[in-house]
Image (cartoon, rainbow, N blue to C red; front, side, top):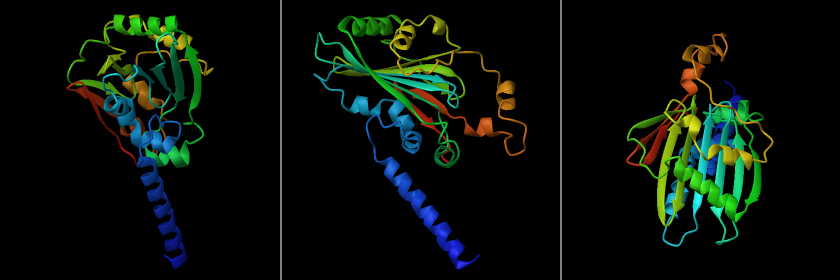
Length: 242
């Protein structure tokens, strides 16, 4: 290998390392950029930033995540209470996930970009949404060991309200998933213009076929998937970055 090739390869590796280190610097709500989203997703979706700031007197804040097959669509709704009587601010992000860092940055970057919109909810709209979340059983504790698969459909919600932080999840296969009370309200306030990916039954065989039959594609659906798990009311996960 010539010295020029080695030098270029070394510079490329150094550049990638710097990108990774820069992306690892936590920025609250920073999911618009694919590398940062990839590296911080578990912390973000698990609400670490909300939990750390959840103290007495903190304004109510909610983060709703609709995983509609990670590589197809993920919708994030962040709701922050304004002073009483003034409603709330809602930020919506629609993204397409990329489970690996190189895939996000080098291969699929045009397809994984986020669409973001913000809107203001009235006091009544805010209260209706919070009540609908409560009616859906948000206040109950999630079953310990609940597993959330990236290739399926689920809602994951965490919130700080009344100075207390809580997390819960609803999976497509769970009873009552199709009768949730809050999802239609959120979709009604969604101004992104991106159609909602409706929940459907995921057939493992069809999922593999959907990734193509080329030798380079075989097994990719399995390798690129990841799992989140709820333990002791907290979220844990793992994924392959490269």
